[in-house]
Length: 92
Image (tube, rainbow, N blue to C red; front, side, top):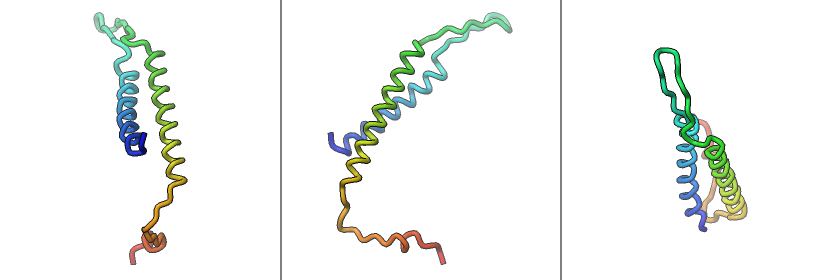
């Protein structure tokens, strides 16, 4: 894949992972109230499977990020003059 394709896919996977993390914390159980104090909490999803999937996505995101950074480390940008001191100079 090209870097731009991986960056786009990385964004989508990150969004999906965040959805699953939210699901893990919010909708992984169902609470049924009986009266004022009694309640039953039932798992709606296998939390271990959900956690495994989130971990797989995190590992994939790490590998993609590392590969992109490695590519950037060997890619030289030419044709741009950079005066770091001038760009980062304080206001006078």
